[in-house]
Image (cartoon, rainbow, N blue to C red; front, side, top):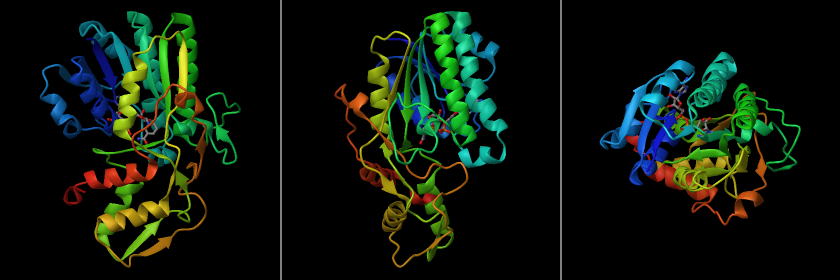
Length: 316
Ligand SMILES: NC(=O)c1ccc[n+]([C@@H]2O[C@H](COP(=O)([O-])OP(=O)(O)OC[C@H]3O[C@@H](n4cnc5c(N)ncnc54)[C@H](O)[C@@H]3O)[C@@H](O)[C@H]2O)c1
């Protein structure tokens, strides 16, 4: 049993991770500034006396240092970040503060307090646009094309240096698209919202062939929990994901089916990307994580289906 801090603890993925860590008897201190997260996500966790939710900006080093000391934190899961990539495309400062500075603050607070164990949620966006390559953890020439990807890669670089200088033990997962219950943003929700407004027509950004792997959130948090408790020295990076992928057009079809709509006219905005900074397709090499024996329970398509099954259409 440990005292665990989760930054971004009221967010989508963190709500599931917190629930899992609580179920194992840990104390969980969730830190969130509620820019994207909400109490609703963690309503169930809040009923557990071992869960504490603190409204706090995670880019404040002194505040994190105070919390770590007061709550005797043993281990940190750093999930706070800006997850609204389209928003930061118009205002890069959002990613500078919420994605990069939060990482610096976590690392510096760890250095000051002596906490050694960290999990970091990175992303496929650090690779940039490499459509013809199987992306390996050792792939070089990383050139992110979104401010979000840039801030995550800068975070990974700072983690590397802090880990070396302070003997931190760090696990980094580079997530693909993650979906599941509690999700509040992304293509599935955009489509549902648009179709609720107009059930006859659906605007689809790009040409609909953008194709990405979707990982089910419960498969992800199980792996985070399991892998973060393994012994390691320095920084270990894994691509995590599924072997198949789902096109935007296939997602549109599944959303229409879930909403019981037929004959919806798709209006493609054209071009092969959804928006500037979006990587329209990528393919992970998953051999490193597969060599450990790990496999997700859901494929990409079944993750989309399970997410749609969990959605309460009335609430969107
Ligand atoms: N969902 C995905 O597809 C995906 C893919 C790759 C990586 N990730 C990463 O996983 C992590 C969790 O993502 P998510 O999908 O659950 O998104 P989310 O937006 O639901 O969670 C992020 C949380 O961080 C909080 N936050 C943002 N800035 C903060 C700050 N300055 N101080 C404190 N809290 C702050 C938000 O309020 C939110 O609750 C993020 O680091 C994200 O970059 C997610």
